[in-house]
Image (tube, chains in turn yellow, brown):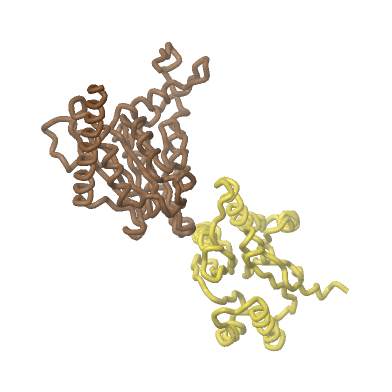
Length: 196
Length: 273
């Protein structure tokens, strides 16, 4: 029985976050929870280490380069490179959505969608996992240039509603995070249905 | 300051009793004896200039011994000292730039490039089995993310600083004095950033400095190699076109002549009294 309310969106840097999806995504944890999981499922420890590797390496860059931040574009390229390198050694088996805020980018935000084979694409909206089958068409319709946060969250909620209605295997527990000039913050976090 | 190493200068891995590593200082001396290299950070770009002494009359001029190299589209490097040592540094810099682009998908930022070159050069001052590089490196670079251009210099010891104007080689002391008179420091220039000189003016001024330092009696004849990285080149590192250098040199020679005439007149006046 998997954990129902795992936060699968890791904060990579002050102004970027990465969400993962895939068969082992709930094992591949970025937070301290990962260390605990390694005790429970030691044979899966390499997966935990690999993903922490990416987020910690991005933190290391900032430390060793005088506080200089990597742009979202650079972080995404680094992550993609690691996915590609791991492909022929011990593949990550996670698909990634990376979003971040940069001052000198028009409109500030940028979003990158990557898969475990090492592809990477800058997109206006994206989805990974079974959700993509249902939600990409919704976002195709609803997304337009120049949305504000409120409108964007409404589109995400629209997607969640559709999943609740149409997706057989759906677990209606979602966490929504926003990345903007003030950093990464949680907008909505549903409770664990098993908590009662 | 001539100071006998007396036994503490045989290896880079030996300190002297007064806390110096003589091998590194000797490496710096190798640079001091070589042709002058200058870098100027102007309002709209960076200019690099190197004096290339023509060693003997048999040399086919304007062909070999390139001193200024492009490291990546957006950055260039000028070297003085042991030119072959400099070539190694350039090759390493190019590797670093390519590596960074492949990992992060962006052009290497100027400070990062300078730090990487500096770390590489410094490495050779740590080992007894290796000798330090006998070359100083001037780095002109542009960061597309912040839209800032900058000039760095790395010395044989591995220290690197960012400069408004940098000089290395034979004529560095008088060159620095001359560069201080130019409006390149936005804090000291009267009109702030807007009154700083642009690259076209910078090219002329550097040509003038190099020519005025050159003593035609004592020093060998030389070639002038110049490059720039500016708005005009689309922020790509390029060689200054030959005709621009030629007209800058012409202007420089005229200026120097006029200055000499003035000081001759002043001498005459002094004598009359």
